[in-house]
Image (cartoon, rainbow, N blue to C red; front, side, top):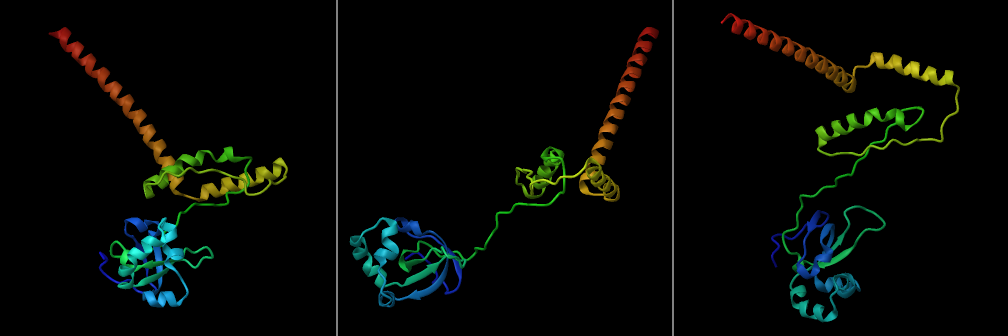
Length: 218
């Protein structure tokens, strides 16, 4: 046995099993720790609960029995209380290393937000690259944003739609956000680059004229 500690009932661990039993590798909550006799008293068999899933037969179980009897049997379940939880009765002697308690639940995240009425997804294409850049810079993840409709469309007159656009324009003037500030700074940088290039051109031309004058005077 290479494990270092006996896991605690009620705790969640990542388990790694010995080579022939790695089918059961995974994260589990420890529900019970039973002696082999207590396990048998529950009317269970390790052939059904442990060995068959690993592709092992009864002969292998018989060969392993001395080690199993000297050890104990863990009742393990999936950490979450779900209807399809994976249940495992695993002999502790086949745990390959100390169960790792440094586990917690992480979530795969997405983002959904209501933007409002537009003429179609093309109206929002301008925001894609800015969104990708913000997420990449903040999280190191490259998202693939997709714009979708959230209803079957709304029928309205052009005047009604223009009123919505006018209200949005009024809101844009009141709001200073990262995107608008960034666009403003980009425009300022572009303007400064243009001016700098013009100044460099003037300086180079004046320098060339000065050299030419000095050459003629020499």
